[in-house]
Image (cartoon, rainbow, N blue to C red; front, top):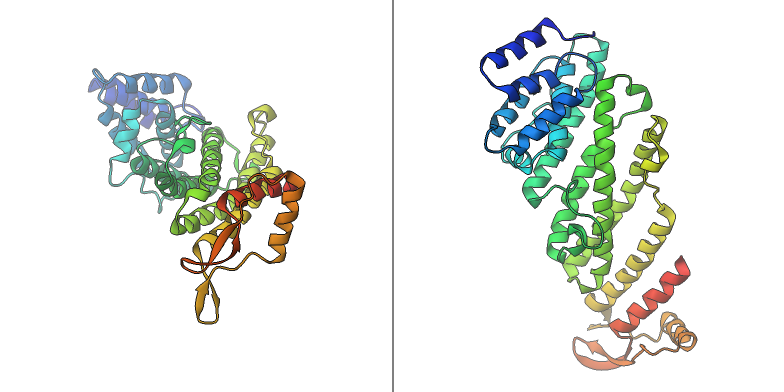
Length: 360
């Protein structure tokens, strides 16, 4: 199908008669043409979302929701793409309005039965709708968009407190999961509509993964400050992080196959990052058990005296490194009773750095 249909022209004319230029632009961006929404209509809507005085942004949202309710897969797909584009590039008020709605894209049962192509595309529409729902939900929970938020050393995920980080990381993981669940293959990218969708998802994933890395770095840096329950939550977050790296890499491979410039695709230095994370967190687990979980000896609850091979190895490291931070302490044989010698927390951190340097 090429060109606008009679239905498209009638809908645009109706909005022109009512004087709603924004609704008309939405209609123009979501025609039955199997091409990406036109750039001029997208730019107009982005600019309109910035004008809070003269433009009715809630009406813009309502018109998009109306188009999402269409029976044609092309119209629905393009309405979702337009919405996604505005979530990323439009005024934040648009995202606030979307996230304030109790229900957003209820597309779990959407199916275009007009042909085999519509049947195939309906699957991706349902998955895309779920991702946009997760994106909106994440904004509602965090009060910021992971895609738009500042990244890097001074970014939101690197400067979060432990409590906020443990709350925010599962939400971010759910959004990334919803994106990766799109599960498109190169053979499915066979028209301009789904290609436009894939490009938006690709750009989102780059920024989401940057946030994800920032969060993991912050988690590692704060691991020694966490409480017992927080350590458990942190380790679960880390384990889920490892499983997602492969899926993210696979998504980027598809992007490369579709002709996206290699320079635009982040290189995941997976082995080096994973070795570093595993070393720190494995030793963090040892610290967790030593600090929080007592061991039993007969009827007493005691900490294990460090006269084991690990302690002798640590003393050997002391000779090699100068051992300025190794301070012998008295270990409790129960909770508070003096007993065998223990290594301090500072010593364990020193050993962590030694082990980390060997691992990488």
